Length: 435
Length: 81
Image (cartoon, rainbow over all chains, first blue to last red; front, side, top):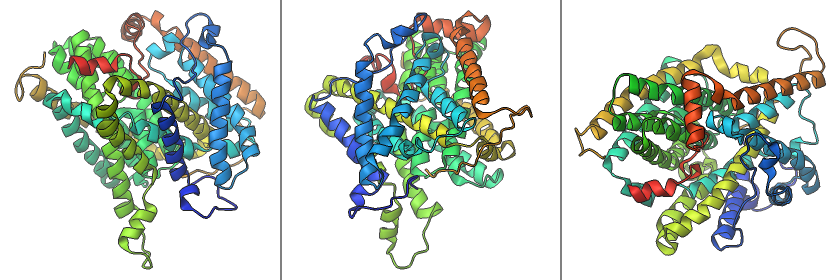
């Protein structure tokens, strides 16, 4: 599971695994933000013609952020058996690569085209590892597991169940009825019909297609212990098809004269990435844009439930242990990815404790900060994954085009089923018309 | 997730040409830069892609958001709803 076998494992399991460290680091950042110690996160700004505009706030805040990340993750690496100094040496260029990925992605034209930091971070890492090779001194800093899981604990805070329940039955009907059906269909189709050897690859593609693209792929890949190559493949496919669907779906809706509100719900339930949904929905008008965004938001919330269920299914069925020395419950606990506890815990705390206590506005302010941290952790993870990936092995995952067939068949099924659900829910058939 | 092993790289490029690692890195960076430059200019394209990008630029919409909390004004959707 972990990339860095520990040479001197500490006594407590609570300090020995990246799963637990993700909870400690994510929890620490959330707590420091909630009590007002951290009020903002340095970032790379948007720019158009002048590249220096991306660093208008100066380089010092970015340097402080990079040092902070290096220390936090370095302490975790050290306690898990690595060397703090060796980690720091590799982390600095890693962080600079993440800055470079954000810099390219934050060009206004590139953002508008829907090609985000995940794409550039992966590509940059892949380019280096498959040309000059990833230097040995950089490898100790490539803690992609730790970065992803810490990012996911932070993402958990953004899953606000309390708010989604107030969004109304039509959106819930489209987003929550279709998604599990598509996911189940794709898993069966991928494993039984296409006979893809790796069930974790199938479930990651299914989650990316049916839930919400890259973020769902990351969460489910971690829950199902997928290989990094499998996540890279799923993310690559979803990024490409998201851009295509963002452009084509509004054209189709307008061409056939579909009700824009129904079309917006269709877009919200089918296009993988949230940003692309907002962009495509807005092409149909302001109200339609909001319907698309809200349907996608409800679908986003599902990521918490899906990741939890996949983790449980994996430890109880797919990776079932034959050990007879441990009880069944103990085996499940041993194999269960512990970071999921932090992921779900953060969601429950923000939904049902902090929001009633502090108010929605205060919680929104906290999430503005923690979501920036989460973005940095994911960006560091994607650079690391690229640096650890081998194109030959990545191509091996393609398996005669079967993953792409799975994506296409699953997405087609998703498009048809969501269209029906959108008509039923937003066409005035099952519920009163929303707008 | 589990890691995949990294084998030593062959110096043969995808086109069958022999090139050293640093040369391939430079070529790759140039290709990456060209892709970024092309995407940055995508608002000039005619047709549907150009229209979409122009619409996103004029509406100041971030089409790359991974999660709803990254979209400007997400809290406003809830208030209006």
